[in-house]
Image (cartoon, rainbow, N blue to C red; front, side, top):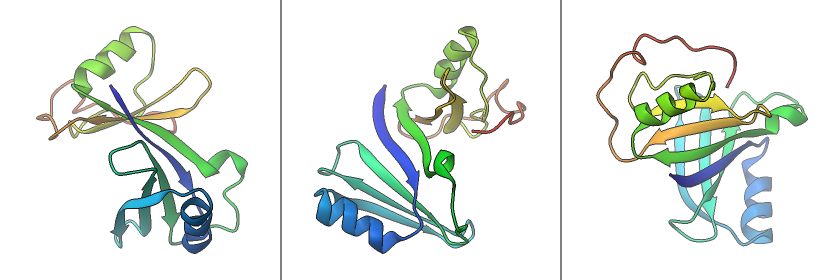
Amino acid sequence: MKFLHSMIRVRSIEENLKFFCEGLGLQETQRKESPEGRFTLIYLATEPGEPEVELTYNWDVPESYGSARNFGHLAFAVTDIYEACARLQRLGVSILRPPRDGRMAFVRSPDQISIELLQEGPALAPAEPWLSMPNTGTW
C-alpha cells in the first residue's frame, strides 16, 4: 500500500494556493476541473511523486463547511482493491462505498476518519459481491 493524499475542502482557491505554495513551499502537481460535478481538485506536494494535499473547491460553496467537513479523507493506493476490501470486511469494517467500478472504495477508521482506497493502475473488471453492493452510511 502507498499513501497518496489527504483532502481538504477550501472556500478560496487563491487564498489557499498562496498559503500552501507561497507560505509552505508546496507546488501544484495537477489540477482537475469537473463542470458536471461543479468542483475543482488541485493537488499539491513538496515535489512530484510525493504524497499530496488535495484541495477540493466546490463551485457552489456554502458559507461554512463547519469544522468537521473541511477535512475530507486519507487516500491509499492498493494492489488489489477487492482483496483489500475483503480483508477489511473480515476485520469487521463496513465497506461504505464498495468498489463497484473496480477502482475506488471508501471505509472509515474506528474514529470515523474517511479512508479512500484506489486501485493501483487500471481498474479491475467489475465483480461480485462488490458490483451489486449498495453504499451505506456516509463516507
